[in-house]
Length: 109
Image 1 (cartoon, helix red, strand yellow):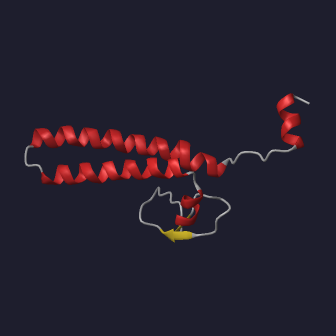
Image 2: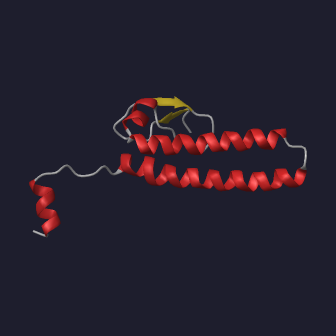
């Protein structure tokens, strides 16, 4: 196992120090290349996760903490889905450029 993790963009050569076993990272430059709506949505998920982490840390009622952890896990799951569908997938399989080959392929020739 190497001690470095590459950016998920295959055309980017940046690496980062490994902190977890199954870690995926996108560098800041590649993240800024994503559409603005995608970036806002991703940051919103992280904002919600941090909000629920703070609420869980402040509560002393264990029943409330259990319910809050369930909400946090659901947000975490949605964040993972968003990562796979809207951040990782477009970088690994970019759209074909518009051109004659693409047009002929769409037409079926």
